[in-house]
Amino acid sequence: MKFYYIYKALAHPEHNGYVAPFTQEERLLHVAEAKRTLGSRIPWICDTIDNKLKHALGNAPNSEFVIDSSGEIVIRRQWSSPNQLRTDLTELVGAVDDPTTVADLKLKVQPPPKVAAKGVVKRIPLPSGLSPLRIEPQEADQPYYVKLRAEAEANLTRGGEGKLYLGFHLDPIYHVHWNNLAAPVKFEIVDDGGAELTPGKGEGPKVSEAADIDPREFLVDVKLGEAKQLRIRVDYFACNDEEGWCKPVTQEYIVHFEVDRDGGRARRSGSRGGGSGRRPGGGGGVQANVVSVDLENGRITVENQEGKETTYRLLLNVQAFNADRQQLRLEDIEKGDRVMLGIFSRRGKEIVGRIMVRQ
Image 1 (cartoon, rainbow, N blue to C red):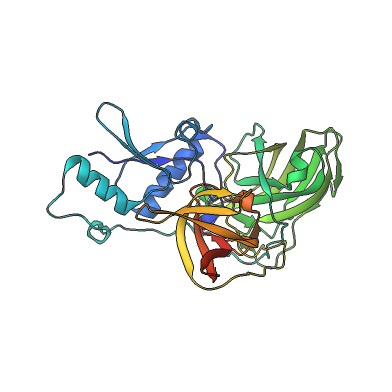
Image 2 (cartoon, one colour; image 1 turned 120 degrees about the vertical axis):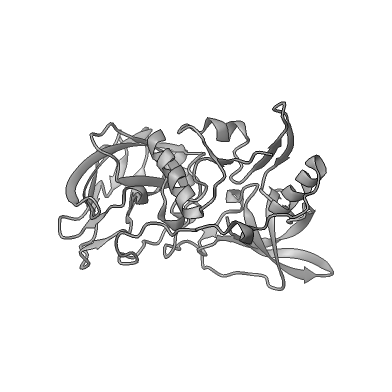
């Protein structure tokens, strides 16, 4: 047997601070960082920056495949299950006398880089149901030390009006931090395409700490009209203490008002918004992977680690949240998501009163 990891688009940008790369070279740096932090010696296959392999394999965020020597896929799993994989391999190639455990590997797990303080600048509250937009970084003479993430309310992607989130995130692979002794980060929408914007420009807060790595975030009210995209310029100062430099940077992006299907779901902390946060239901909890959500009939089907599927009824006003307690729409829950279901009994039937999406 040969084992490989496939490095695809980030399912959860901001997890441990990592953000989506813009170039193939940056994605390869992500692979190197994954090797360092996980300590695994299994080889990695790196997907292309336009995610051709991810699309060809079905877009599941944590899929698993067993391929025979002729190239035939003999087992396909939407959500990786180590225990089930071991069972599969035993049936396909036979049992081993002394199975390897994770503890036997003695992996040297390393933490993400920490170049400056975090938790200095408070995250802004966000409305629920935001979707990532497609970002097109413009040609620049130096790396994008800061990555823009843009998210929009659903009405904006349909040509209406709503909130646009602009988040400028330092990229950990470059080991940089904000220079708070210089002017704060500034953005300006230099070509609105005819949209109405409030505000059309802004700047980050003045921070007492000399350096930090927290994102700089903004909410813009947009009346889109006929506009299909925005052009945004950002000015910032970045510093790399290891290499001994600190410099001003000006870069531009085009933000397209179309959902980025490879944008993932950001894992934020301290930015909860939308809804009351009330969690209905009660009783026991079930951890499983989502197989399907039937909104029309009010059902959710999940699969446990043993591969057993169960269908539950949904409470009429069931609410869903991500791991940061930010409210989600039921239609945002995807096949393969790891969930905790809050189950209670009504007239002898198990009903889901709340859904917590873990991954």
